[in-house]
Image (cartoon, rainbow, N blue to C red; front, side, top):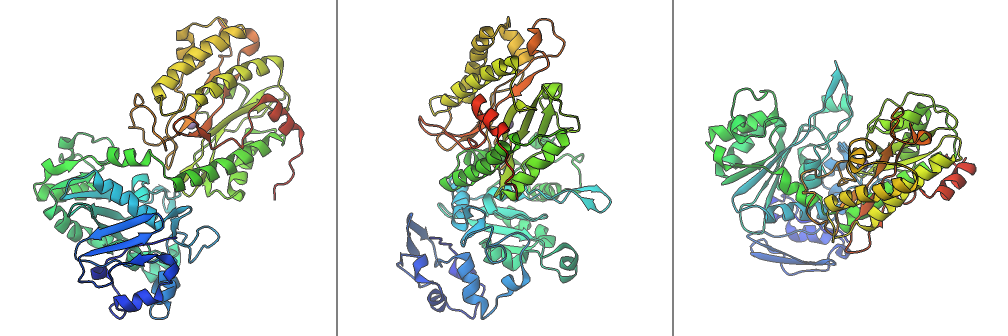
Length: 541
Ligand SMILES: [Mn+2]
């Protein structure tokens, strides 16, 4: 069941009355509606997940995005014919289900996210989000576009050069503005279809939409009437006062908006937005959990398959993982992976991935696919030749023991900080058991110099402002990734362990007392790895 809401007074198609429109909507998409008259001030729609009540002088149209287009195709159908700037159910039904704006996430969920945001804001607030620009490498050669994750989280809109505003004009309701690049036949001939202004309304359910070129005019009204303005400020200018200083780079959209805020003398009304959005993003919905389980499963299976191949170069294993993530159904690799043979594994963020893999050494990978915009982030280490040596086995098992204990601690009774402290204490015991004489400061400074984990979601290092000392919440997804890196030439540590780096990282969905490991498809027990290394996985299509 997918129900989208649009307001009667925003209905753009004047030729279709509300009642006619309702008749074109298949009834299975809503259970009941108490009012279809635009004059009625309260409209209630019952949907399977509960009752959605909206107050105000507006009517509500339940629909699916897909159905809406089908229903009006006879009369207009412009949006479908002209295509969109990103996958939609209409154009890429193999990627999205009906009612979804992005893989696994419904248009209704995007509405609820915006609604949850305004619950945190006072009446009169306007949250302004500036989408990312396309970044250029050199000349006309651009990097792959990546949307501002907060912008993506609240809209699902995935094209460059867009601004969204969520205005809270009255209690418990909002107005969603989306300003985008308009449709442009000439540009689209080169760059492919854009969603355009009509698409922003029809597909992304904006209440107001317009050409980004006139953003100043649109924002002039919004900022003029706003009592407070929530906006992410450009990096490097965290002091609000400095925002109004001329050294802020003039070319950015943010700068222009800040100028406008200054023009309206609303400096004191400016508030940071990102922490509020992060606190929402940190708690994943059931739909997000499913999407992240998909990312984890595809990525994990790819890694388990990689065990069964023999690679002579880091670059080949790197290419294999990227290939396996993609043909498994992921959009791409979620980040530049670490593929580190032998001593290269001692560099925590080694990403050159251009060395030879040597028989007798181990290879460490830190890689994951991205599905529906959500990241998997998995680390594994295994012997290049498929068989652990005794020292490799001892050190690996020590890291695995710590990792598994830490996963057990990933519950709502603990904070990331306390899990990290436990991981250090556990390492002290495990390392002593295999013959290390390492002090706590050896562990913290040298052997295990990084943190036990981080939040995971649309960003690999998701929601970095979430306090590490606060207990985890149901719905958080974190990584648990202890590792040991024994320097190659430090006499302090047993000789047979020197030069080995091992990190084992899983992705964990937090529940009260039973964490769900979403990356379990990447096997990690020694016997399972050796078995996978032995078996011929030649099933890659
Ligand atoms: Mn990680």
